[in-house]
Amino acid sequence: MSHLYDLLIRRASIIDGSGRDAFVADVAIDGERIAAVGDLAEAHGREEIAAAGLTLTPGFIDVHTHDDTNVIRTPEMLPKLSQGVTTVVVGNCGISASPVSLDGEVPDPMNLLGRAEDFRYPTFAAYAEAVTAARPSVNVAALIGHTSLRSQVMDRFDRPASPAEIAAMRAQLERALAEGALGLSSGLAYRNAFHAPSAEMNALVEAVGHAGGVYTTHLRDEFAGLPAAMEEAFATAAHGQAPLVISHLKCAGAGNWGNAPLALAKLDDAARRHGVHCDCYPYTAGSSTLDLGQVTDEIDIFITWSDPHPEMARQPLKTIAAQWQLSLEDAARRLQPAGAVYHNMSEADMRQVLAHPLSMVGSDGLPNDPHPHPRLWGAFPRVLAHYSRDLQLLPLAAAVHKMTGLSAANFGLTDRGEIRPGAFADLVLFDLDTLEDTATYSAPIAKARGIELVVVNGAIGYRHGQASATRNGRLLRREVRLSPRPSRPAA
Image (cartoon, rainbow, N blue to C red):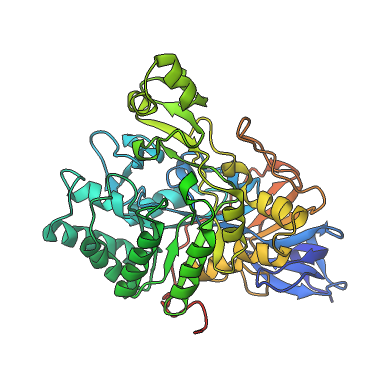
């Protein structure tokens, strides 16, 4: 008698996440996991999906998100689910929702995650419990933010932490790592972390290496000081014996365009001695809080929100400055706290980072921005449709690997990111011919076309443009020790 599976996807073109080429097969799911892959013509499923002509991949892992509070407050997570993302890594750029409790104003850039009342998780365990109770539609894995740790022990940010403050941060970090956090993130370019010297970071990253976690960093300088900032990150990770991920690697600022080959050569060189990767998003504009250090007339800066002047949002900073008859910097100061999209990268540089074997895909979307960057809704389909299918920048199997298998390996996500028996059934079925990101800078809230089906932990979470009523994501704790061994063979 043939086996009856819970779900059977028939004759899909499978790209399994390992980097190998597509093959046609059936995929059977029992419970939360993949039970079989191959010719299952004799088998039956309680539900069967005819997938001939469609492409089946592992669910996309968004390694760079700021969804920390959104997975609890807006657990349907439509911006991610609708583009095929089944796992989000939160806590990036030094900002995380835990271990944090706040009384007063939310320090910049922690305000990207929400208001003071959204920071109510004094331990990672409390955050994990809240995620579990919310049952989001996607899986959640979390980093601990360095700036968030600083906010709990320091009276002001414009100085290095004292030995006692470092010890207090390290104790909080060690507890969070023991409770299942993936590792530590830093955002050293931001003013509330910029004054943290190497000694402060070394002590914290030592704790990460000891626990077998990962260290990710928004570099101290993504502009002219990029080479030195990369060296600092390599040295910190090597000192702590933790693998390193450089967040959204870019050559920012018009004076820095054309330097991607130099940056990638540095990455390659470091990877011969240590575990080093990066993530990137497939756009030439960044998005964050409005930072006076990035205000220049060399690039277009678009204001997305402003607390004191909401009426000035959704227009260029140059336009606002002209209306107010102020310099760009004075106008920016009057708008703060505010959000901005910075058109500060070159297409050629971005393409080289995206195509590089050590890079992964992360959206870096800001879900609380009222006029978000289009990457929030479109990053993953954009890589597959625009850069792989249309421009042939990289093979489809390589593109999928960057958002599935490679990501799972680098963040210690056990049994995720590949289509194979025994792996969790996180899957995306899409029509490669019609796949398209539809979100734009002017109309950024838009679902991708061509995503037919998304499966999370064995349950259908999204079908034909609609989210399912049941949500099946969960908190993913790190279960393996990550190694700092080199990610490139020695030259």
